[in-house]
Image (cartoon, rainbow, N blue to C red; front, side):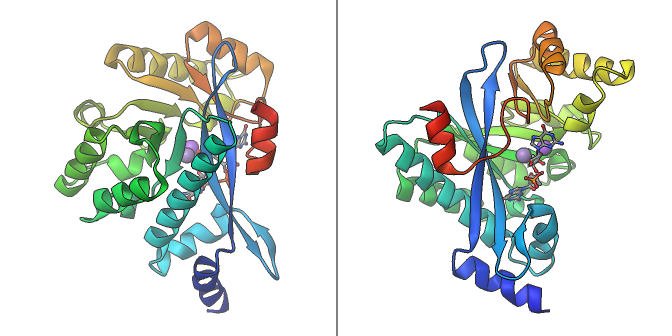
Length: 251
Ligand code: G
Ligand code: G
Ligand code: MN
Ligand code: NA
């Protein structure tokens, strides 16, 4: 109960912090985008990762508020980087399952983009496979409207949710993000390598971009380059870092 009240206060008092993980092109390693990841700097418990408080945020009904807080602050950060002469081509933001179904989602996102003056084409929303499965009509309409604004849609953790391929085909999806569980054993398990190859092939055939998550070694990166993967993200390139560190690294 105490943590619940603290989380509500943290949202009101801007105690959440944002870090940004680079998404880079293969084979070149140029910065293509950043994924914003939130952390909670808790006064008693220290720095908490999303796994420690997102389920609570969900349970107490503040996940929508949290996602919008993250979206607004990250868009504002991109604008601040722009003013400082550092151009991040694309901002990727995670949206919870719950969020994307709401009636007012497109309006709220549009108004954040307007307030922060971010070009919608620079925003990509990451939706997990689970949130797309079944795709109720409200979700489909919202995604179409967001896609129509020029916002990109990426399927996060791809391969873990048994997505219906029909569903991917019918939604305005731009990118598949191969879940890091497949990348983890890429060099040691031939079935995981086969899955990665298949997802890259699927993306190619459907005209989608494909990004590998959780790339930790040069060997994994090299294999992904040979397989024709477009982009990668992971500790081999960079962990998520604060805004100043990101700018000083890539500016
Ligand atoms: O950085 P870390 O590995 O701890 O992130 C764990 C998970 O939390 C990630 O899979 C990411 O998708 C999710 N996450 C991080 N920030 C946000 C956010 O602002 N909103 C939502 N919905 N999920 C987030
Ligand atoms: O949205 P998503 O669940 O994909 O968020 C990415 C999560 O993966 C973040 O919590 C981030 O800290 C974590 N992460 C990012 N790169 C790596 C990596 O190379 N290896 C591992 N194990 N985790 C990573
Ligand atoms: Mn993600
Ligand atoms: Na992911």
